Image (cartoon, rainbow over the protein chains, first blue to last red):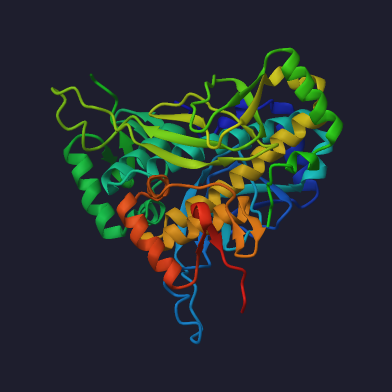
Length: 227
Length: 227
């Protein structure tokens, strides 16, 4: 498993990362956010999570059902789709794209983010390559995510989604591998095209089957495999 | 719109691309595939589409429903999820990942692919950066794709999915922007978590509303906006 704990930035070449942090603080390119605070982003900027976790979301600006009556002012669907986490040491970027809008929130309290122009990375060519490789990796993960969302049964999508998230962000505990932060059933539903109510019901089924476990503080776990 | 026609490789610095092609042919790293032929891929290799189009697919190896009865040999779901196209001049890679398997097919006849180790790009540092930037772009597109798959109504997912595909691969025609190659309703269904039958019914609805059009040879189009 790919463990992204809150100290995983230590796995990066420490000196470069420390230099970037120093540079960011000196140039006021560093900010700490409280839980669920929206992170202001701009096209063309690169963001790096220093600690905590960032939640990416997407919003559809178009709908096949609301565009029907052109005379009314059709309200765009304002519900946000959960698109994944960005953990410590990981980059993200938000490119303005119609007909969908992407956004970022601080998922947990005390999440710190550094930002820069891509050109700023000219000072650290090796680090630039690491960032680009991180995006390559994120892209591969999203292809797996799309693979599970193509499954027809909601419970299969739910189980695939949880498996992928825990595989990427889970930390070892006595209950198996667990997500280090909570995720609401509404957020899960938004990702897999379902509702909070359905997610709650199907999570119960997955628990009964022993496929997932829930730790105190509502953390989702995959039990250690015993077969 | 980002037009990826069969001649879009000309938009790349021509000389580098030509040198890479020469190198690939000289080193037997070039092959042409017929329609729907599986492209053999290996972890750690980088693939570049020279002409035609590659179809990426994913297969779930796990299911919340078949793991129920452990005594039976549970057949893994063998249905493949359509994960998108890779057009001329674009890179792709297939990283081995459990519990999902990714794969690539030649989507149209006479699709040519070049492959190399990442190290081979040491000869063309500028081109390496282009490849990495292309993956960044593909990653952003997949986030939009995930945004639409989070929509609850199948018709919204279908319309969002078609909009994103045509936006990326569409070519201008008198019918608006059209995909340059067909996509079956079963393939569309596999991407949006629905069935061939439902896709056929909802495509009819979208046509009735004038949100999409179908050209001869079954090509999907977004009509030019006239409002």
